[in-house]
Length: 296
Image (cartoon, rainbow, N blue to C red; front, side, top):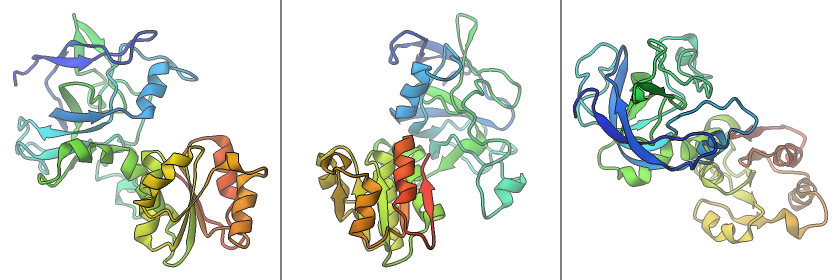
């Protein structure tokens, strides 16, 4: 790939379609950055939310995308700060990176890196405050440090996870966001005990991953809550053994769950991002001990 070459990218602008491919210039990396060749990328609801620019400052033109899989282009081999990568490594860009040096990275309790934690308003690279994308001499803004709706992207080396090359990139790309969010919230925060009960609210990618996390932890009773009843069949594959649709009941869902479980579940994982869902999740857990986890 040529340095400063023209590559295909999806540039989003306010009041224009989310998907609009054109040619953009991808500049050379700087500092602890690497350039990735993106082979597969998924569309997350978060991309749509920020494209709609509702309730936030519009920052356009911008290249969205954060769930992707690709490979390292090999331009930084042996460079300081990127020694964990070599040419051709299969990688996942991640929006919550790790510098490996700050107190948060060194803590066993948090992965909210002081330098590379998610920042939805940061539209340039940390190293020099400039964008690596441009068109006709004008900058195109980055999105959460990844911008994977592009044939090539430039990211901080701390935001690149090396993965097993045997894993198919078209399947594993969702690990960059949806899967690790739900699974991590369950396994690392909620931590349901073996034989315990758990309620999972919402069965998108995050919710299904949360249910899988509860299954892996050994929860024996996993109650799924969703407004779309047809999702139950798919949720069974991830360990859900009971399902309820709030629309089928004439009382709040937390009251129904409390009745089903003789006072409430041991853990609840909320994966819809809705205020009502959060309230229901909090109130469906029995009094002692209280343990809730939100994937958002």
